[in-house]
Length: 156
Image (cartoon, rainbow, N blue to C red; front, side, top):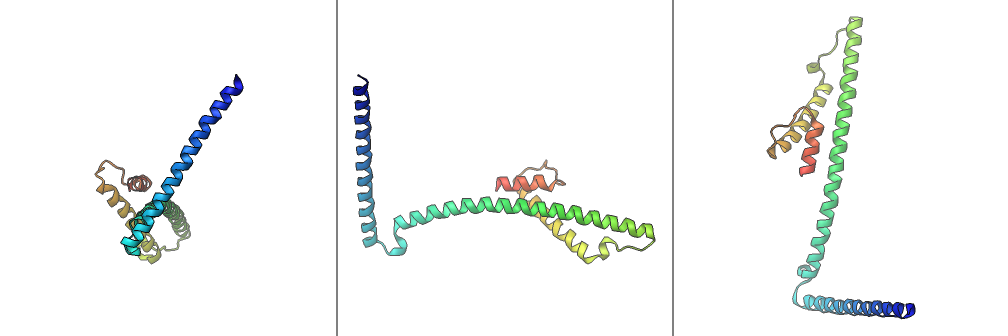
């Protein structure tokens, strides 16, 4: 009794396997015929099957690139945040040391390297804020660049 049931199950599975094998073969024949027909009708660069294949690959590549760009943007923001923290902290400590020793210190405006760094970080902040502002969200905390960046990246 159990053997009959197993035998029937295997016959059903074998029938499905044969059906799928035949369907796969039929699809391969259709694909081959279409490729031959398209090769005869269309020039190599305009073959619809190849164009569809290229479009699919481009879509996959775009998705991958988008994710990689998000990672780069987040890493860039992290570097900017850490550099700002370290540089400003070191600069403040240096100015305190100079003041305690009675040595005049260079102001932020007179230090070209510090001024350039501030300009770069401010431009980055403006870019993120303008991207964020374009999306119509006005109640954002513009002082938190990380939140702005995250919002801009997620909505991109």
